[in-house]
Length: 465
Image (cartoon, rainbow, N blue to C red; front, side, top):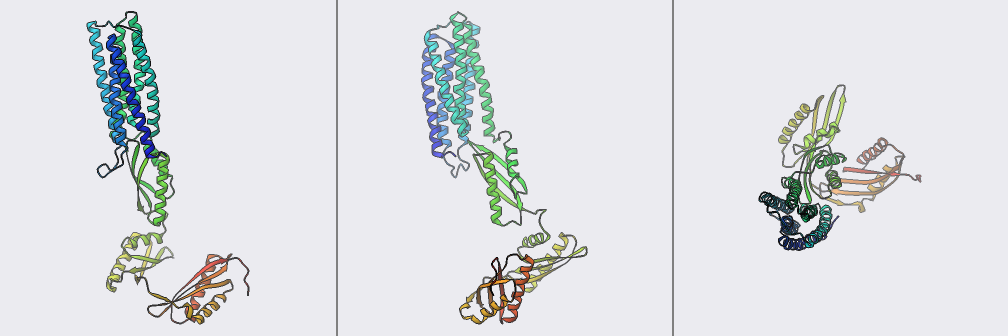
């Protein structure tokens, strides 16, 4: 990854050196062109003068485009590079039209004689050397940072190489008094430049119109569809601003996923996109959707939750071809009994209508309880702790019982929590049965208990009696 300040310095440096090169070449061509009367060299001087102007536009565009986004330019200033490239292209085309017009006029009026000297060849040779070095440097940086303005500048210098070669050919013919070759060389230069300018201009307009390079859209879709957890891609928009591609995407994810997992899926999507578009600036929105993989319990939970209620203990029973649903719903404390019952009846009806085969739905109404105040009385509950430990060890598979904590709630009742180590080879069904028996015995043998929570842990050591 390129550091922003390093990228700016490198782009500015190469643009500035191109500016100096254009000034030097233009001055040489103007002097020799007027001295020899060669339209080909004067056309090249005009071309180089345009290069100077284009290099100046590029230099300032590069500096402006690298400014960070602000409240008036929320996508940054990268379009300045595309606009600069368009201006340079239009200037090139205007110059080419002038050159062709002047060359045709000379051919018609027969104002063809020119003075060919060694200086003409020397200037064109120097021009080719400078143009080659500048175009190579500009193309390298343009490709490195995907910079269209620098690419346009590189195009200016690279077309100069071919056009200079054509002018030299015209000078050779002029040396043998074939003076029309100079005008024909000028027209050839203009046609070469116009053709290349058209290609760059089309790409520049495409960028200004937010056209994305061919294949990028499909590549992004393919990459994101491969991310685990993405159910579907609902929308995708992209636009280019300088070297960056700004991407907005909406993906469908399972509505039952925890927020942390949904966030991880979005992070995975962003990384996949960067693998396809290293300069992408992505905004991903996750839309919760119903999945074919959802169980009936999950579907019922989401149906109730969509109404702002808090369901739990959802149980589905199969009775022949019919199904029966039991669930608990917690209602806010501000609801009275009639309000809660009315909502429950509406939810029961909605569940029966939405899911086929459900004969009966019964809702257990509960109050949504706020966090309760408790007091830890473990230190003065030795007798209760010994009773609990004895109950736990009455189960053959329990190897250890510790971390017994006794709390007293604000209503005076007790909340008990403990850890039990159970031999590791047991199935979940057996462990659940052991835990349930311990909880039931505590309710029976310890008075005033409201809540018991037994946490089971796997234990691999041999039990010591």
